[in-house]
Amino acid sequence: KAGVTQTPRYLIKTRGQQVTLSCSPISGHRSVSWYQQTPGQGLQFLFEYFSETQRNKGNFPGRFSGRQFSNSRSEMNVSTLELGDSALYLCASSFGTSGGMETQYFGPGTRLLVL
Amino acid sequence: AQTVTQSQPEMSVQEAETVTLSCTYDTSESDYYLFWYKQPPSRQMILVIRQEAYKQQNATENRFSVNFQKAAKSFSLKISDSQLGDAAMYFCAYGGATNKLIFGTGTLLAVQP
Image: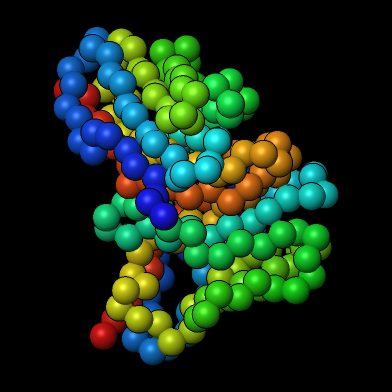
């Protein structure tokens, strides 16, 4: 069974630009969660999507948004990039059907560098 | 709010020896899950082991086992017969009522040949 895939793996952007990251979950998984990992703040939860709806949200500004498609693939968008947005963005998938905590399986991440 | 604390930023172990990584957490929820994830230099987060809070029996996965002390809110990971491939950053994580993980700051484990 294929794992979680994320594209692109690396990105370099400049301040003020916007970026879109993509995540394809494990087949059969309908929940996709996004996390940001930085040396200073560690791993922080961004949001979770299930059945094309945002089900949970972390404490990030509105510049961070996401969506999920009918095939469960998810995209994350960051607008008006700031230097502090440089991070590893991790996507994780789970079945999503319980409504509560489930074991999440992670993709390889997208490393974003903002110059 | 729930918190996860890993007080050991770095640990070192000799190959074939046993090492224990510590984790404490704080929560007011009665039903929750605890996880250990491993992040090698490739940065891929890999699930090591999972523990349901309602289960008294400690989880075990091959050379990896946990010591779950619910009253003390402690969740340590024991790695037996350490191998070079075990070298990585290890994160303890909490999952409660929602499908959202709260991570500790991680412990960097070095394995000496």
